[in-house]
Structure formats: C-alpha cells, structure tokens
Image (tube, rainbow, N blue to C red):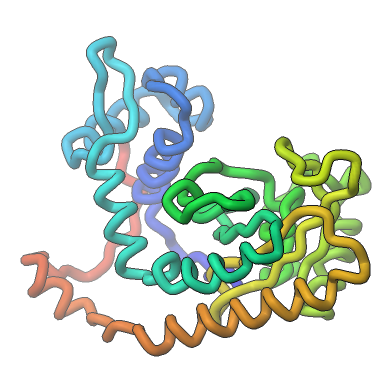
Length: 279
C-alpha cells in the first residue's frame, strides 16, 4: 500500500523529483520551456530545478541548451537496484518461468503507470530483458492491476480523479470492482493486446501476482493462456513469488538510522523543515 504523505510534504523536493522523472522518461533531449509546459509549472522554477540537477550530475545540458538524463541518474539507478536486491533475487526464479514459453515480467508501480524492471520474450536473455520497456498504463497491465489491488480504495480514487481510465471506459467504479476481485483471489488475470503477440490470432492474457511484504512489485506471465492452463501458471507464479520473497528475507541488509547515515556521508543533521521555497 502506498505510504501517506506527511502533513506538510516538501513541495520543492516533490517538484525536483517530478522534473527528474520527466527527464528520465523523455525519448529525446527537452528544453526548459517545453518541460515546464508538460509539467504545468513556471518556466523560471523548472529552469532553476534543471540547473540544480545538472550541477548534481543527474541531468545533462546538451550543446543546444536542452536537457537529458545525466550520468548520475544511471549511477542512482544502479545503486538503488543493488541496494534493494529485488532484481538480483528475482532473476533466477524468473528464468525458471521461461519454460512455459510465455512473456515473463516484473514491474513496479509509479503513480498510474507500471515501470517494467524485467520483460522477457521467449528465449530472451536476462541482459536483453532488463529495462527494455518504458512506462505503461497500470490499468492495461496485469502487473499494474495486481499492484493497484494492494492500494486502498481512497488512494485509487485520488489517483484517477477526473481522469479517463485506460481500459475502463465505465469509470472508477468498474475499476474498483475489478480490483476487489483481484484482491479476493490473490492474482490478476486480464486480457491484453501485445504489440508482439506470441500466438497471432489467439486471445492473450496476463496473470500476475504481487510480490513482497509489504508489496513492492508484481510478477507476471503473458501470452495465450487457455482456461485449462491457469492453475499451472498461477502455481508457478506463486512458487516464484515465494522464492523471491525468501531470498529478500535471507539477504536483507541492516538498516541505517539517520545518525549513521549522517556520519557515513558527512551530512549535517538538522530538524526537518517543510517549506515551499520560492523560485
């Protein structure tokens, strides 16, 4: 379940992360004005945020004064994947699932989208499967639906307030009904329309299960899955889920408190201040 925001979340930090995320998902370098338009923020504020991110190495300014992800972004991604251990613990169990001859995927929820950490077609190596697909609407993905089913009804309503919900033309009540059913049976099964169908002419479905306690990701298989094959697929996914969660528990590193973090990274510990700094 997504954590609730504090009483006074730091809006400056939120804006910086939103700007960083926009750079990470842009297919090409983007200018300050265009980025501000996409984010619905003031140009002067976005300009200051971009310059700060560039200074940190998380953004890079090109020769024509546009911005793209900087080397620090890749370092941050690599460090976070290593520290979490999720992908490292999941690759072995996911490779075993490829015996079914279907797509195997692992994803995490980012707002109303799924980010696939791993998405392997039949016969694809782990190296080819990592990070090959960008953000995808959560409501059109079995992995996304498995993750949304773990969220509270209040959170889902807020997420899709005044929005057209992909795959659910009847609106939020239809989505909530589907999520309740997924939560009840413990896994998601939805029909999908893949860009690269494994079995042309046959209906394709994704079956996905949540992973982690608390839930942090979801694991799925996709392809032609006839009714008769559902029990075997579900059983295999739950076995892989168990292996991943067991590996996470066994390899869990000790957590550092704020004092230890400050000492390690030479930070100055000060009382938190929640303000929206002017641009």
